[in-house]
Image (cartoon, rainbow over all chains, first blue to last red; front, side, top):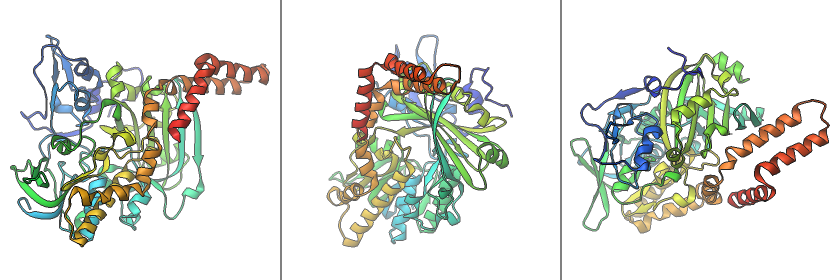
Length: 102
Length: 434
């Protein structure tokens, strides 16, 4: 197992998510970014504020989400509640993150 | 079970939901509990500290078989700058008592145990079942829930919403609004495993003794937040959390912040050789008294994080969750005994019960704290730096006389914050604390 607290390396969220267990509901993402031309400041902030690094910007400058590593914290939901740019649901019962320790 | 009618339905199997379900079942009520996770605890995240008193009032002999990690004998409060920390520690052998006051726990283990007690008390638990909607009658009274289990429904006299910080069911039903980004904190946490004897040597512990560290300062990169490190039997829980509104304005990533905290010279040696086995993220309601939503209505009650029941100043939440769950359950049991309907009018008795306990008393006492912390960022940057510099000036023996050192320290505070600024901060804090 890699030692992941050596300060010289910039943290990669993938290295952290790798420890977690998920049951992915393939083809049924529980979060959707609604179609938009230009993302609001709040939506754009998710590209760094999401603790699972689920949000990115595509080459047209729009924000996209990939929910596989999602820990269902709800930060994106709270941050964009004012702009309504995200549709947020819990995963279907039994799916999503499965904390071993919590 | 789906399609049946119950005395009460509890949405969620965290501390508040389990407390509510257990108390009602013990009093003979027919209770259905719905949990979206594969098992209770699989969606739940906490530091985690268990405050024994709140659980003891529900399960007096819980310590006999609950999965407890370490009882806390030492509390360290640190203000940190980039290379130092100034600490206030309290350690007492008095905490080595027959009935310890606080324990560290691992929530997935603890929640499974609590759930076994709940089921043994007679509650019907359905896991892997997400509640999607509340059912209402023609008068708008809540009469049950719809689930994602084939769209199945269940009916009850009252629905107890113990659905956690995101509380989608209640929000969708219009029972409350979304919390504002400055009313919730995002916390990230890792579980680091180490052999038991290394933990005990490193933290000066024997047997089941435990240490908790709560830290604030430059570790949150100018944001309002705190870090923590808790000792478990064979693992350390390390985490850091800041207001969501601050994360929105900061370029920092939550995992970057956690990594920097782990690499702080005061923290890094404590984690040496450990193996990380999980990374978790969760929201913590931190809006306090002023963020508490409507708590009862016709056929429904809100408990735990869904009701914003967290005392952020004292890092207490699970005890408020269990206490609100218990009080909601006792309210429902009393109504049932009297033969009263679960109307908003009758359920308001829950609010009266809350007022008589530490829950509302403490939240009301600190109602000014969230806006004080949110609006005074120097508490997290400037002051920790000043404290550290002052301690260093005072402790370094370098030929400078002590009176000159005293003057230097006072001058650094005046220069850093100005005299009116210092007085203003003290007055604001005193007002918020009162």
